[in-house]
Image (cartoon, rainbow over all chains, first blue to last red; front, top):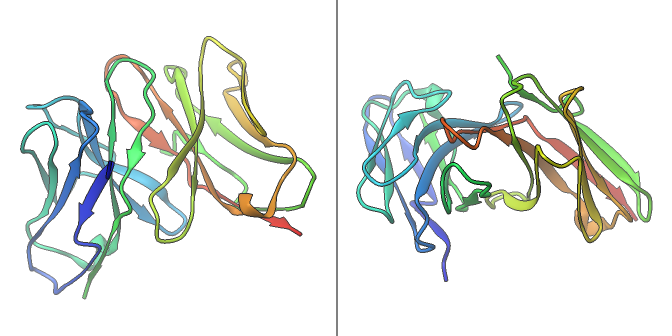
Length: 114
Length: 113
């Protein structure tokens, strides 16, 4: 049981390049989330998907897009990377919405934009 | 606007003593609160949670206290062990409506042997 799997683990981009961060969960969870972690800023929510077929903006959505491909997979896309998007990105999932349900996290993608 | 705040960036405690990590929130709609610990190069790991209908929840050495009137929660670790050294995040959520989990900035706990 892998839980939440993120790929790639590391990535270096040049300013203006695009890329997609992949996330998959095998726990049959309904909700999925993308966070970024920056020093002194904690974890900030980028986008989330309460259920398959829906996505919503979080605290810091600018510069990102997401796709909930199916119940298992939730991808995060950077269309034109900027140095301000250098961060560690975490994907998470939770069993159900509207009920007390903790988040389960992947091990992160460390992204550097030069 | 930081809705969930952890005002102590770091904390050092002697092994065997109590560790108390604090968290304040501003949104009175939050009704579910969680604590996570995070080691370097790993994702946050769920530790313990509490619903707003309770004021205390225990799990082994970990107890979370919630004071709704003060919009404050705390995590007590007794007794503290060197393996507890980590970064601890509190998080809060509104369980109906937005389904967002908002995190604090974290407190680095160091338990000294």
